[in-house]
Length: 409
Picture 1 (cartoon, rainbow, N blue to C red):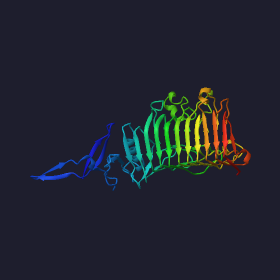
Picture 2 (cartoon, rainbow, N blue to C red):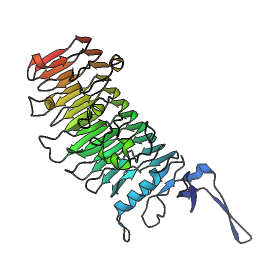
Picture 3 (cartoon, helix red, strand yellow):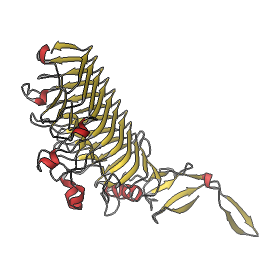
Picture 4 (cartoon, rainbow, N blue to C red):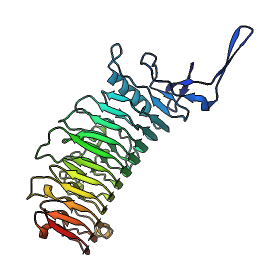
C-alpha cells in the first residue's frame, strides 16, 4: 500500500491511499506503476498512529477527514481535529470534505471556513468541547456579500457541550450562497445555533435546531438569527474594521421544513442602539415555510424591519410566561424603523396557512414608525391567544384578512 500526496490549490499537501497499482519484478528490481486517478480511495480508519495529514482523497475526489479519537503526545485529540478541519476548510479553492459516518469528532477550537467549501457529515457527530466557542465561522475580508460564498454543509450532528455561556454554533457574515441541509445543531438557551450577519441567498432546510441546559425567563436569544451588522448586534466583527459594522442587512433568506427551538425560534434583528441611521436599516425577502418553530421564553418567530416576508404553512408556538409583553406573541412582524416611500411601496407581507399559538397575540403585523407596509395578507391561519379578539392584529396600507380562525388558548 502506498500513499499519494496531492497539492491543493493553496499549496497544502494531503496524503491519500493509492490502490490498484500494478507492481512487477524485472530482473530482481521492483517497478511500481501508478494507478489511474479513479483508483484513489480513502485510507481505512484503523488507528491514529499513521496519520500525518489532515485528510485523504477518496474515489470521488473528496477529502475524507482524518479523525483523532485519542490524545497524542503533547496534544489533545480535540486540538488535532480542530487543526485538521481548519487546514481542510480554509482557503477559497473548490473542495468537498467528508466527515466519516459513525465518527465522533471532538473539537477544541473554532473552524474558519473559506469559500467554495462543501462539508458532508451525514451520520457523524461533531462536538465543541471548549466553553464559549462555536464550531464554524468566517473571517470577513470584504463587504457587499463578498467575504465568503458557495458553502454547503450537509448532515451531521453539531453540538456544543457548554450549557450556559453564549456563542454562535455556526456563524456566517458578509457572504452569499450558503446552504445548510439536514443538519442537527444542539445549542443552549443563551446561544444561536445559526447566525447570519449581512448575508444573502442563504437556505436553511430539513434541519433540527435544539437547545439544552437551563432556560432563563428573560432570555431572548434566538436559535436562528438573521442579523444586521452593527457594533452592538455583531460585536465580534468590530475587530476587523468599521466597514464591517455599518448596518449591512440580510436578503433572500429561506427557512424551509425545519424544526427550530430556542429561547426565541427565529428572529430577524434590528439595531436598537446606534441612532436612527442604523435603526432604519431593513432586511429583504425572508421566506419561512413548512417549519415547526418554538420559543420557550420569547416569540417563536420575529421579523423586525423586513420589507418583504412570506410566512406560510408553519406551526409556530411560544411558551413565554410574559403574557402582557410582545415576547409572548407567536409570530411578531414589526417595522421599527422608517424607510423611503419608494422602498415601502415594495413592502409586502404574506402570512398564510399557519397554526400559531401565542398569548398577547398569536399573529401581529404592525409598524412602530411612520412607515407602513404596502400590502399585508393574512389568510387561512389558525390563531390561538389569551382572547380571540386579540389573536390577530394586522395593519398596513392595504390589508387582506380572510379565512382565518381564532381561538382562546
